[in-house]
Image (tube, rainbow, N blue to C red):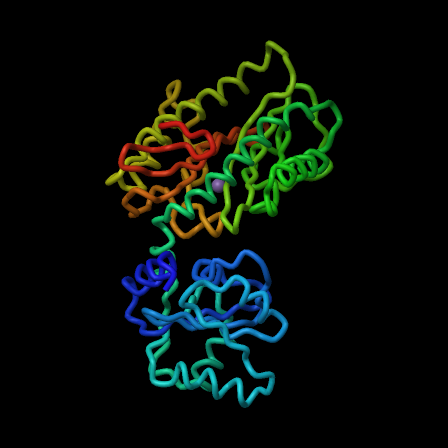
Length: 365
Ligand SMILES: [Mn+2]
């Protein structure tokens, strides 16, 4: 069997009591389908994957049978599911009946879950979503390479975007320009809808680009990501538009967030707890200038990133995750002042035995 596939199956089964895993796509693809198959092309709508510790079977339709065969990993079986419902049911029942079946309860529709229980007669159906998240938390070399490529693209696009700043351009226009730069640099698609916020809008962390026009003195937040071979990056930069000497507060906010991020990244070492790392950034912002910005950092420090932008774990005040080599987290402190504006700076950080590495920049933190 393909070594990487064997390693991935091992990791998932190490964290679950299931003896079969059943991944069922809807009209969209379960992220764990991507994790196991590593398919780079095709939709595989409504297809099913059934895995045991040492086998992986894909039940697909005639429509995508050839696409699957062309990308099939060694040790993976591609099976053309019969069109006739009764035959298809019998085929799947043979795989599942009497087994302890692990599903991704974060993704599978309840209707599918109920149908599986009723029609395929498993011994038990259990939630294996955490087993998948845990397996995906520590990335392989191949996965890290993909995230790194995505991070490089996003960083390059973020470096280019200020040259398009001009008075009167709208957030939507700038977001479109960003997306096309990112695509030209090799991104398969944006890893989420690009956020561009001007001025007061920057105080809302998830503001969606609208027809707000850029004005002199505005803070500009651009939060975006690329996808390479199915893996995401997620980065943010904050700029000031204009050269006015009076923009002192904006520049101060940027410097405070930069320093909070630097301190947090330095703390992203093996063995540190997620909540501790969050605290490093949060307490710096809260304590700055006698509490001038206390309480303005209104979200978590970061999250794991991989096949999904939010790949399962957070660096937050309540986070129990212990950092280990191979994990990739965003570090994205921010300051948000309602009615004024906001600042966020975000990088993707790889934990290594030598310390944190900023992906896309190749630097040690
Ligand atoms: Mn993020």
